[in-house]
Each structure stands twice: as structure tokens, then as C-alpha cells.
Length: 182
Image (cartoon, rainbow, N blue to C red; front, side, top):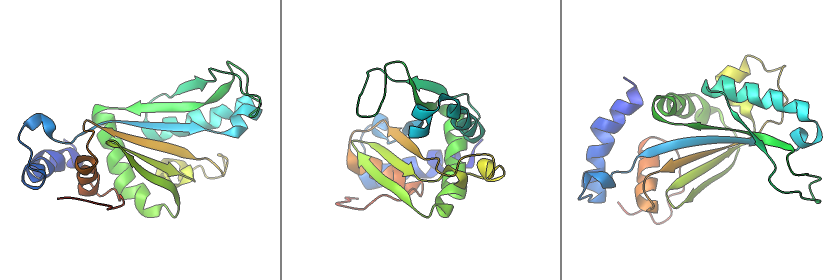
């Protein structure tokens, strides 16, 4: 069994009962899914560039990503309906915990600059400017483009900001501590 999953079951669940005054076991905060989105202007300009992003997500998550296409035409972005925009992967269950261990202990300490840590109604969004921070991609540094960015969305089962902030800080993901109550 995964170390992070054990940490969640044995410590975070009990800690949430004491600190957050949870009455029902269904109120316990839990990460339900992680979605990783990559969208780039280079994909719009040259559709073959999507192969780099597909391979990057496949190496990082061990799952095949889904290709996203434009739903509407936008003249400002030179985008027509049906053009390739980017790729995405949704992680659940065991894949979620494997990615979390890798992200928390290997990637977060090496990130020099992130776009944002946005906590919104129980979900956390982290923008990473350089995907080459991941150890799977650092081996192939010369093969991938240098400006690969991604948005990682952690969605929880709670809608309360305090519960989700407690969950993310307890698994060592930094969140701004504005009005933290526990």
C-alpha cells in the first residue's frame, strides 16, 4: 500500500475529526481526482506539436491522455472549430496517489516559479511554467520544447475552503493561509 494513502487513513482522518469538528465520516476531506491540462499556442499553429505534449503526459502519469479540440471558432486566437488545442489526463484511485507522491516529494521542491496556487470551492489549481521539472522528463531534456506549461487541478469532495485548505496543508501542498480556522 502507498505511504501517502496510509498517512491519509491513519493520521489525516483522525486529525480532521479533532481539528475540524467533523460529526459524520462522510464529511472527511478527500482528494477525488487530479486533472492535468496542457494547452499551448504552438499546438494551434502546428498540429504535429501535440505529440510532444501527449508523450510528456504519458511519461508523467502512465496513462494515455485525451486530445482536446476547439468547440467554437475564435477569430482573436485564429482558432477554428475542431482544431487541436491541447491534452488532458484525469487521475483517480491508485494513479492519483502515485502522482501525488511524485508531485509532493520530487516536483514541488524543485519548482522555482509557479503561475498560481488558486483555492476555489474545495479545488486547488497549480500552474507549472516548466514541465521539465518532472524526473521522467528531465532525462529527455533535449527532446521536449523548453516552454511546456501545465495546469494541475486537485478536486476534493468538500466545498468548504477551510476543509480543503486543511487537507492540502496536511499533505504538504502549500496554500496561502488566509483566514485559516482550525
